[in-house]
Image (cartoon, rainbow, N blue to C red):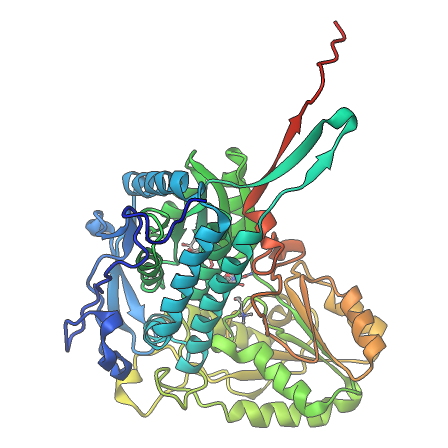
Length: 532
Ligand SMILES: NC(=O)c1ccc[n+]([C@@H]2O[C@H](COP(=O)([O-])OP(=O)(O)OC[C@H]3O[C@@H](n4cnc5c(N)ncnc54)[C@H](O)[C@@H]3O)[C@@H](O)[C@H]2O)c1
Ligand SMILES: C[N+](C)(C)CCCC=O
């Protein structure tokens, strides 16, 4: 058997990684810098190249079209986003293809060793990566650490699956037989949203690489900073140069990726309108597509629930990452009999959420991604009031006493009461910290109302009645139903949407199906029967 580790000089298991991040206060390599833990909000400037292909960082060329990227907590410029053009996208894809030719020939167990090493490195550098994620995204450090943990767990999980990928043997008459081979697709493209930048890159690359594919990943132009760290870590772990590449840019770069003839598959995370375009573009080249899109998920709370857990669940369903979460349960249906105690407790706990500097351990809610996004969320709240909703708390720009945060995009978490199903805040994805509470009377009624949406990403139910819980789960039209909890998604569990929330899955065993194809080999052991 060919041994990967220790024999090949071409793809060493460990290579020296140096960081390319420069700080205003120090120009020390990022990932080997213990003091990095002390970096504070408002102090980082990223100067170095954010693209990665051929096993190295590559500086963008089109500097005249560069756009500023802001640190959400301060409104300060963090770095410049230089979009990749046709030539650069082509280079990244060709680099991926040449790595694919080598990587796809390895045994699963050989790929697994390298992926496990990548998972180990991420685990080791989790706190530093989390700090970068916070500075670029604005979410709290508490959440970012969990996101990075989920990222390495995902890589570890698919490392475990890689050696188990196998086909089937099928006996045919006369000693003939057939067998199937599970083969990779080739060069896969990943396109990410800004709310979970590092985690999305891991959720896409881990199953892709485990199956023997290469990937070109494009992060959101608003969060370009951490995907390249993942690329460096994969390289350090020992993947061939070009196996995981990062190209920066917005719609135009994304469109170049979707149209490129050497791309076999596009896995997209983002909004429904962009998802439709990605599907259209990919269809022209008959490329496989996974779409992880938006949602407006229902959370149903029955009167027999354990109330305190239901309240906690409602907060987890609405306020993670400032409410910028695709699967959030933002339509909170509460059975009328328990409306009063539920609302009182939700409001009390929502008012107690510590909003502020996202790098501080005590903070539970950071800043929204951008000023225009914050204004859009405020617009939804204004419209909700005009349409008859009552603001029970929050829903206003939050002004911190810390002067360095005065340019940040903070919003106090908002609870809306007196909502109706026909209100815009109940129908459309707000993608901000806004919970809409809706009363209901019967199970039949609430199921009909919960399903009355074009989205179908997630759903939740709180009840002590075990039969009801499973009946409701069966009848909700959504890719996930949480019973007596919300927004827990371990990497072993498939995640993805129904209806306009998309198709295909991420995480879990099933995702192997979306990053591989089946070849059938038919073997004749006798003579050829000839009809002619
Ligand atoms: N279902 C999920 O797993 C999931 C996870 C996170 C976010 N989301 C959804 O993402 C949305 C928020 O993210 P967003 O604002 O970054 O979404 P978006 O659709 O604006 O952008 C997503 C990505 O697509 C790229 N893009 C834009 N136009 C493109 C084009 N024409 N061709 C190719 N790529 C293009 C963007 O640059 C970005 O990288 C919300 O709707 C949210 O629900 C879904
Ligand atoms: C990890 N969560 C909380 C389930 C979020 C998944 C990604 C959706 O925006």
